[in-house]
Length: 333
Ligand code: MG
Image 1 (tube, rainbow, N blue to C red):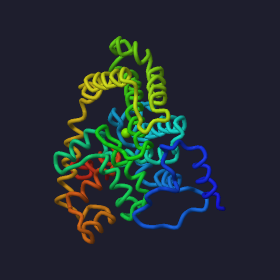
Image 2 (cartoon, protein in one colour; image 1 turned 30 degrees about the vertical axis):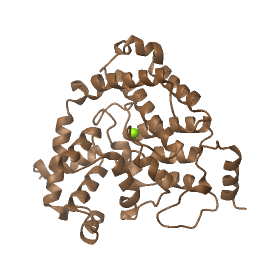
Image 3 (cartoon, protein in one colour; image 1 turned 90 degrees about the vertical axis):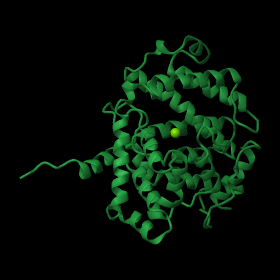
Image 4 (tube, rainbow, N blue to C red; image 1 turned 30 degrees about the horizontal axis):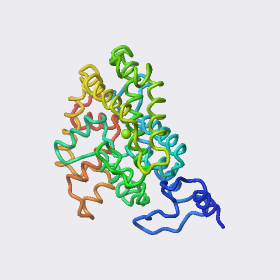
């Protein structure tokens, strides 16, 4: 018996009947020989961790654009916090922790530079949503267009992680809720750090139900998910806490995500992304080799290829490219 087979055997013994089993995965788009050490979802987790799009998350906006403070979240630290919440919940519910972790680490790979402002920009010039783009990254952009060839379960979780999505595994559902818990926790923490809000601005009735600090609220939310989902075929929360969380999220939309102080620069970011899109549409010869190849040798449209390239940019790379094309350089001699 290989180590992988032993690990798969162990899953049979300790996982909940509702968990996804590595051995029962619906498999990959292209068949591959199994690893002798790692079951499939563990292997997918490693592939995501090692891919280039994952490393670029460190320079992509979570909420605050190009923050100079070291302690603000980026898309990378957001992803790691989602992964930690998901693993805590999955472990407690005896679900497949490797699957939850793989989905969590991959869920935001398709995010544009400048967060949702970038997404909005690409959506005005073409059609774009970051969850579908995350799937494109792992399916057909990474590894020079060959993709990571991930399992069906990981791909399903990535595609359906957004609020309106319906992941088919409980591990996917765990990530979907962990994403929300993570941003409600850390975007508030960052908003307080950035002087956008104080703890006292949060409505008293919500604090009474959820707790009096970011940390207390995260703890409360995670406990609520676990106690209400234990040995059940779905991931859920109590109605009181779920309602309070929805209200807190609405409060954050009003006071953080749409706050002119935090978002004042967003229109510039939207403008920049649209300008870049139009420029590459006119000058596809400027695209890097991989994207030029896709343009010339596949039936992927020019619009899609340009979107793929721009969506992959970090905030700082997009600024640099914008300067290259639209800001005159000073004479250096
Ligand atoms: Mg996310």
